[in-house]
Image (cartoon, rainbow, N blue to C red; front, top):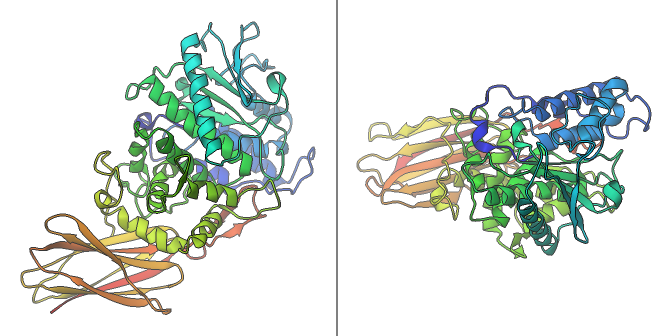
Length: 522
């Protein structure tokens, strides 16, 4: 789901619920269809149902509860539900044209039993809407929505992505279905979900999607702009489902948010989400900033689309104007051709290795870039990208105290940065680092020039994790030197086979120690 980003500011930000659903994900393949499943599976499915109900009621807004992926959790887990719970799940996942079996049906869109359904189709999909009642759309808006979906679908197909999978024949044939209705009342701009009883092949599922009927509640954007980025985001979820619907939520949301900017570069609404990610400040959102792992799944996943912007600006090869790197990651996760146990971070490892680099190297470079975005991203100045906060205490060296030491403890895919300030007469700065694990930990030094601009260098380290660089430190020419320490580990435990999702575990590389020593020399 693409939420209202500004609306999220008005919601309680201290209660974070979605991780609970993922932490108790059901065990893949442990129960036969039709069986009640294990106690753990039932509890996981019940938790998924609760989260989906909250998301559909709009109670998840601002807490990281996402409607598309909350519903994804539910349609994957629903086989473990029985009785009233199973019926509730089926109602939540039912299409807008499916008659309810409960007068208090909680669905976001239901057209009603006597609705005059309007439909427009092409060879690949159908759009459905009504022109009367609370979910009414105008013929003009429906035509715009159809053209927008057609454009987005065409771009993704031309870029080499899989098309969403055919459905089971709902609405009369197997073409993918889209619906228009009043969904901004629950804080949503759009969603995709599945009413299937199981995956089509591997972990790939078919989907249907819903979009708002007028986008009148997005005053910061025109209805056309809001529609465009929402279709780009949500349709990409349907594309993801065609590879592996059971993959990690952070990857699904961060790549879908990144694709908004690829298809509608002049809208730039996703720049606001950067405040929730590793560029953001915890005083704005508690889990923002570089101390929260990149693969955390809540609102930070939306903000961490910046990771993909960083990589695709650096590796800027495209097909049909769409970065190949993002497609390659999803291709690495494809479950439709053969059994595939890769999870999100392993797919990134594979794609970066093919480009003769690594996740630790690129994550450290990304963490450093976030300290000086104006020099690192094409649109940073124009779109006012935030600057990641320093989390290591600053150092003011002096002639009588020319050295200092700082340290940090780093979880996987987190970083810590501190600055060193020159003094009158300083010339060079020796930076020594001691990293707990040279396989995954990295250090990057950036010299901030007094007249503007930066110069950056990685710190070469030996197998024992120790290394050094000497950089300019002339007072008046250098305003500061920043050192970024990063843990680029993608190793996780409890992944692959122990969860219905790609990775429900934790990293054995959390809590790595890193130390940096500064010495003014020359």
